[in-house]
Structures are given as structure tokens and as C-alpha cells.
Image 1 (tube, rainbow, N blue to C red):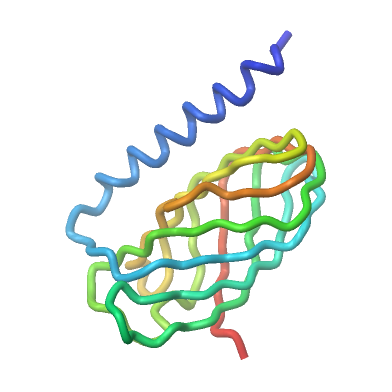
Image 2: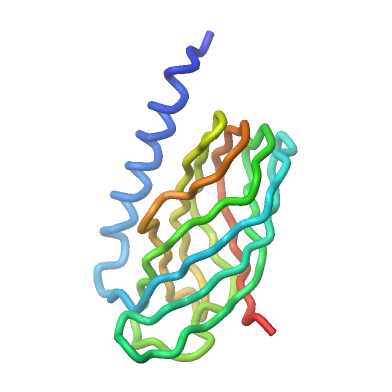
Length: 161
């Protein structure tokens, strides 16, 4: 039998391992900005879920233009429960200088979240233009609801119109 107190601790350990493991994955990359996303509510469908995202990319240097993106965040794995919308902020790393539209494309990586009233989650993702962009959690995902999820996360981003 799994104790309820064990689940958040185990989830925290998994999230820490994912974050620490990803920071050394691509040492030649430099931070080019920050991606802040708001997510729609979702219902976990046992084997996955999907949320709409609306994001704003802000460059690392003052005066760089901001870019708006929309897309979907999909979790494939265990996802049970219901959550309201949430928000997550990623540090954006790339092997090249920033250019317009560089975040367009698909990302994939590890994801984990748990919510009992208020909740936390983290996603470490790699993808974008030529699979050269890494998104690492700068602040963990915040949301409300009752949910436990873990598995593979996929994020698809497109320039907002």
C-alpha cells in the first residue's frame, strides 16, 4: 500500500533528478531568455492529458522584442485527476544566438506533477528549431485541483497570430 505522504516525496525526488540530469546534458548551450506559459484546465485520462498553452518569450537582454506563442502540452503516462489552469516559467537555452521564431516546433522530455488543492509540477523539455532548444524549469508549475501525473511531456509551440 502506498502512503499519501510518500507520493509528494517521491515526485520531488524524480523532479530533482530530472532537473539536475538535464543541466549537464548540453553544456555548450547558453541562456537566451525566459518562456512564461499559462495553461488551460485539464482532466487526466489515466494514460495522458492535453492542455492548451499561451506563452510569452522574453529575451535575455534588455530591448529584445518579446514573442508570443500558442500550443499544446501533452502528457503521456499516468495522469489521473482534474486541474484548473496553471502557469510555468522555463529558462530557455540554445546553442546559437536568439532569432525570431526559434521556439517554434515540438519539444519532448520528462514531466511530473501532483496536486491536492494546490499543486506543483515540472517539465524538462528539448526541441524547437533543429532540436537545438532546451527548456528547463525556472519556477515549478502552479495549479489547483486533484491530480497525479508523470511520464513523457510533449509541448508543441507555434507563433501566436
